[in-house]
Image (cartoon, rainbow, N blue to C red):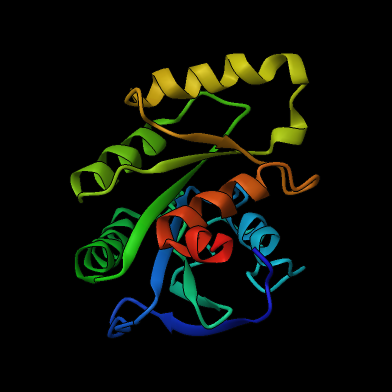
Length: 199
């Protein structure tokens, strides 16, 4: 994917009306500090368009990034150690998005490759499944692991989330950009852009 233009087009808070976009959308979910902003910046070839934050739960809006006037990357609020009432508000907002978006093609769920999936990760995975999407797992912070540990940790994520046989896990490093091409290849395939580029 050659990134020609990126534009943070819409920011939706809890009470905002969600946009009715005409292009395909790809949503990214994950707990706070799992590297979601770094991943989105890495995909867009931008240093800091998606704001990274040391303070967990900083992204409290749904952010729509228009890529090449052809698709949207959608940054969902990170689930963090926040009050139950905050969690419920975000949950309702994300659920509303999952149920009303007509062009959502896939939901990517980010999990830290160094650790077994947490209770929150499992809950989020099951919740996305129950909302009608099978999450594609991105195992972040790949550069923090020794190469010899990677397969073992991927297996632990598969087992922890009870992934189906067809479940996809893509290891990703924001440092080395390993995994970036695989994510874009998948997005291209899901939008049908791969076919048109080859034709």
